[in-house]
Amino acid sequence: MLELDHLNKSYTKGSAEIRALADLSCELKAGTFYAVYGASGAGKSTMLMIIGGMLRPDSGAVVHGGKNIYGLSSKARNDFRKRTIGFVFQKFHLMPYLTVAQNIRMPLSLRKGSAAAQEKTAAAAARVGLSDRLSHYPHELSVGQQQRVAIARALVGDPQIILADEPTGNLDEANQRMVAACLHEEADRGKLVVAVTHESALYNSAHHRLQIADGRLMGQGGT
Image (tube, rainbow, N blue to C red):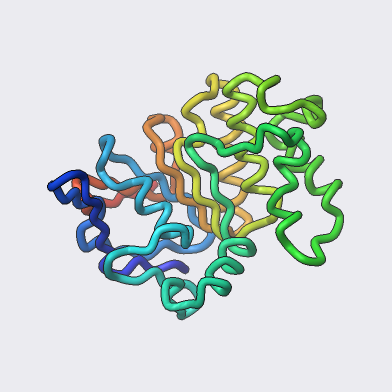
């Protein structure tokens, strides 16, 4: 389980202060797929970055395994990210000088003693329909294919927590269904899956649905 405890985060733009999260609290359980919905600027991506240990909140805690991850040392928090989190970035962040296989394999490369990297990479690529693109570079792929590389990279390390920022936003209907199936499979395997989405099919298929407005959790729903 992951506990978000009274999270607050603000940004300064010029002379204005922008509140991204305002006293946001909830519990997120393993084995569950959560979909997060809200208007642009509501705080959805900020919440994901904070959960993933990449953006320190102004106040509040993210508790995993009984520990506030922002109370850990920088090295310990980096280790938490590498071993626990799989993140699908909205802008992909693929390395342009690496092949598809090398991009997918990157989380395994960051771990000491990670075995069977080639087999795991091939399996992750197959899950998102990219087995025939392993030797290609990002610029040789469509935007939708690049997004699927980013999804495979998030899954390859078998993380406990999968965070996805608009994971189906650039995909056609068939690939949206494939990615949704992957995320549900991960939840069925006991993983915690949290996806920010504007796609109604993905949102409605989630086990639980969270709505955020002005940095606040406005409501929760479940199937």
